[in-house]
Every structure is written in structure tokens, then in C-alpha cells.
Image 1 (cartoon, rainbow, N blue to C red):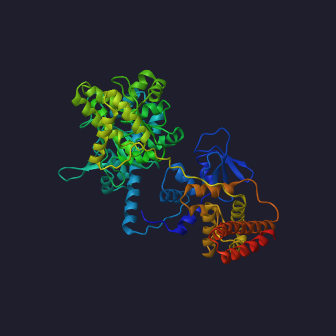
Image 2: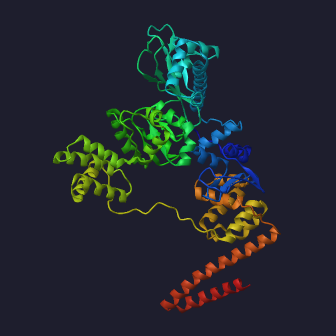
Image 3: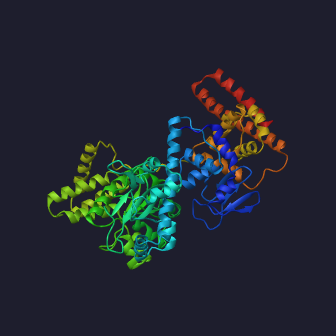
Length: 600
């Protein structure tokens, strides 16, 4: 993806109405100059989330998150900066030029495939809802038997592919879609003799696979039996092939519906199949997705990581599901996720469990999920005779590979102790084996040393410095006078110093200085939050602003002198210690001169 020109980014921000954009996600009410609502980024009873239409910024005084319209979309939709800008550009009808012809062609092809997939999804859905044929009736009966409601069918856009060889082809041709595009989208197949094409999906229930932006990426299809007992040819489930818009292992079924609940509840339930996701969701479990395969991929995990670090795995407990679970666990740990594993009664998957026992029993199983360590240890101890030394070595080898993937040293130490107790093996022996594991994998992790949490230390903003910054943000006319009298280095607060420096740079370049654009100049969330907090405060700087500015400049200059005096005091002490009288006299003279400036 090419870089987006700076002037286009500015146009997108200027064209967007932040109240309108945020209002699509959060109910807002007018409150003075601002709009107020409940923060979408944390739970709160009293609204503390403010949106300022004049400055086009938002800030929450509950969780201290703030920024401009791009920052809101990045956080709400878990998008990178270019993705957020492109999404907003689409909302305000601004075309983003492509700097690379090949990329432009690829982007155009992707959009064409999204469009044809959307048409195909509409065709399949309409078939399921209104087709009067026996095959469609069988599909409806199947879903009714599985207790899938009409509302759920519509929410997940479930459809039906008829048993015709060219039903979809005929429909799409009527929409002026050519066969080449249908083939690129993976919807049709060429006949072996090369004399035409036929529909890939026939006599199957269709499950559209959508991305986070609700684009139709691909389709899953389940075979059904007709009223005469005949079933669909081929495998029980088939899926779209890889296409320019769909790569296996990069998407999660139901994620576009679940992402908001995942963020709000701060954990996700991961299941295997379409129905395993659909039925709990229908029952009210909205933070659930399906993996669309067996083991989770790194791409899927990183997609989830945008919304939460907490995962509950819920796969079938048959040998295949167990193996898939074990393969996924280590990858989840490597990606920094907190993982638990829930088990259902023998023979049940999430779909059948909820139909038999109800949603509250399902939630109970999820809440009682095991840690992944206990889950894997339990499996290992069932597989091998724990009394045999060879089995203890085998189990410890498997478990130590998992333990070593944890970054937290306290967790690793605790799991080593627990493993030693379970196997009745000394911790020292397990520690020695852990070192061997590291040598084999090339890891050089230090053990037994607790790393301090990586939490940034946020300085307390000095009042006079924040007042100066706020005045400059409200009144650009004071920037030149401030720049002539006060340098960025005169600001003791590091964050304000950086913002002032940026304001001076933009001023020298003759560029517009607005809160929304200034926020865009910083990638550090702490910087963005600090700017938005200053700007969204309801209390307006009232009174004679020229007098305020003069007062601020005087106080800043005195602070600068006091810092210089503090430095001189240290130098005077050194001169006295060394007996350098000439240097001492000069320093005292300079100190007294500064003292007069402060007094004046």
C-alpha cells in the first residue's frame, strides 16, 4: 500500500465531522460547547467522553484516551493509520491517489471481487429465504431442525446454493459480471473439457465469510440431503479457494459481528465451525468467533490481539480437535495472549451443548475454563504412564517447550514448580532440562529475574506550560510572539516541549495549525491524549488574552532564570571546592545579575 499524501490526509480530517463519525458508534448529547457520551473504550456509569466539534477532537476523562477523528477510528476499529484514513476517505468521498500503477490495478481488482462476492451472497441468501424448490426447502428444514432463527439467518447472511449447474452464473451474467471475474472470485470452475464453466457451490448451505469491515471475502458451504435422501456430491464442507481478497488463515468467521463485544468484554471465545459460532451468538454469547480451520494462525491471533489479549479456546475434544488445540496453544503464547481452555461434556460441540443444556450452562463452562498449562498437562498425563521414567521425560519435554514460551518469569517459575509436583521430579532437574530446551531453540531468556512492567511514566504537566500551549492552540496569533521570546528548551515538561517544537515548525512552514492536524503529527498515544485533554476542557480561557500571554511569558522567563541560577549554584560549589577564586568571582557575579532579573 502506497503512502497517502499529507495533503490528502489533511483533506480527509477537514472533511470529516467528528461528531457525526463518533455518533455512529456512541450516542452523544450536547453539553455546552462539547458533546458528551459514555466512553466506548472502558466501562463507566457516568459519561466522561467528550467530543469537541470546534477543534474536531475527542477526549475521555475517565480513561484519558483522546485524539482526532483518525485516532478514534484506529482505536474503535483496531486499524492501522493508513487503513483508518482510507476508511474515512470512503465515508467523505475523497479519492486517495495510488502512487503505483500495479497497486492501483490490484486495488481495483480487489474491489471488483468484493462487489461480485456481495452479489453472490445476496443471490444465495435470497435462494434460502424465498426459493420454492425442494432443495431450498430441505435447506430451510435443516436450519429449522438446528434451531437457527430467521433473525440469525439474516444477521449472518446465511444462504443456499441451488442444485443447478449454472444458477449463480446465470444470475451474475444478468448483473453484467463476466466469467473471468467470477473465476477470479473462486465462485465458478472451468469444465475439464474446456467447454465452459459451472458453479463451484451446488446444493449447499452457504456461510459468507466477511472481514472486519464487512467485506465479503469468501464462502463456506455445507452439504445437505434432499427430501429424497440424496446428498450433495463431494465433501461435507467445502470453502472458497484462495483469491486476491481471501487467503486462508487470515480471517475469523463471525468476527465482524463479534469485534465490538470482544473489545467491551476483553476476551474472546474461539470455536471451530460455523454452527459452533452461530448458535452461541444466537443465544446471546456475542464475543465468539470460529477459526475456519484447525489450528489458529499467527495472522488470526494478531487480528484478535487488536481487540483483546484474553482467549478461551473451545474445540471439540476428539483426537483431531485436541491436536488442533495443542498446535494453537503455543502460537497463542508466543503472540503474548492469555489463554484458557474450556471443555464441554463428552460428545458435545458448542452448538449441541447449547441446544441441550442452554446458554447459562455454556457460560458456566467458559467461566470455569482451565489455564492452558493445566489443560496440556492433563492431556500429556492421560497419554503416557506417569509412573514410568521415560514417560516423565516425555511429558516434561513437551511441557517445558510450552513453559519456555511465556515471557513472564513468575509464571514460568510457578509452572516449573507445578510440573515438578505433578511428575514428582525435582525442580532443579526441570530447570536443567529447560536450559537444554533453550539451547536447542536458540533462546537466551534469563530465568528468575522479574522484568519491570513496561509502563511509561507520564510526567505531571506544569500548569503555566500547559496554559501557554492551550493559548497557542486557541489563538494562532500568539505563536510568533511566543516563538520570539520562549524557546522549546524553556519548557521543562518533555511532552509539552515536543508539541511546542512541532507548532514552531508548522508555523515556519506556513502550514495550518489545528488541534486535529497537530494530533496527527504524533504517533505516541500519550502525546495525543495530552493534546486532546488540554483542548477539550470545557472551561474557556476568558479575559484579556494579550494580558494573559504577557503574564505567561513573564513567568516562563523567570522559570528559565531560576533554572540557570540552579545550575550556577552547582558550579559555585565546585569552584569553592577546587579553590578557583577567579572562576568563583565570575560565577557569583553572574548569579547576582540573574537574581536581579528574578526580583524585577
